[in-house]
Length: 413
Picture 1 (cartoon, helix red, strand yellow):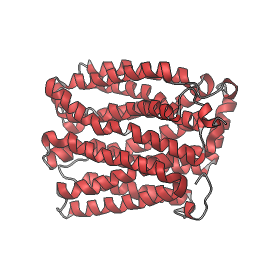
Picture 2 (cartoon, helix red, strand yellow):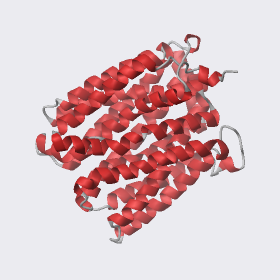
Picture 3 (cartoon, one colour):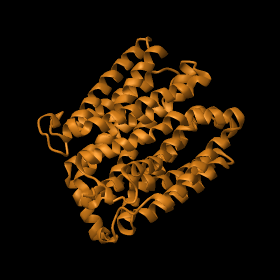
């Protein structure tokens, strides 16, 4: 008998479905990580500004990303996943080309904002498509498999950016994003199926919006894990925003920075694979709660060592690798738990979850990243604060209980 879940994304197999989703989600990682080695060149070329100010290109992108996710879900619930996805990809490609042609820093920021708006569609629709086709722990497994594949991009993106800089300039680094986006647009056009049948679509109306938002806001699980994901996302923004300065300016890695960054990102990919293999047996809560606890402890140790002047590169690297290993376990499960109660409003819920996660994470991450003082302390403090905030939000969501899946073996836990 044919698996009804597989039939929902026919003719793509599970492997093909995961591969296309990973390509769509990788657009966000590429747009942020490939340009990290180019920060000093961009700063010098566009008005001799500070490298710390250049970090605003990440924030501008994430603002657009959050804005887009606020309405993409409504549109995809009305028009279907596929047309909205293709429109978003087209905007992403055009804006990516504009970033490479920017004449000054303000133009670059505007282009990055629009690029972020375009990238909201792949992110929201990839998540909504998984919810269209799967539920419960199997949904979490598919999300983790997707994360495992798309995490290859953060591993290779900085090295790719550094390689382009060796033979050309920062404009071609940004141009590579446009080229990759165009390739994904073509693949999506030919390969991505419509996962939302016409009979399940809903026209945009005040009643529909009210019902969807009411469903979301009444769900302690959806709101709680969305805020938790946002707080935890702030830690990732802190790391990405300050990674070039910490590893190049503080630790003096120079051209070795992309290789070290790739090694740390590889831990993220490995953890997503581990989560996909374990989540059906152990449950989303046990794995994600344990990961947040360990992340907070490791980040607190990093902060203590930094304040004591003992955080050398050889101490920092293994601690941060362990942290990245834990990050991959947290995000897939948090996202799946936030989406789980919202099967009827998957598109709108994906917009809500994505937009709020990015808005919270980007704002807190940028504030911390902008306080780089030539040491590792701001990064370590930012990681620890994000970990503690996430723990508090989990406890509020779960009414004071952690690891609930250990005692309640529901298939959705």
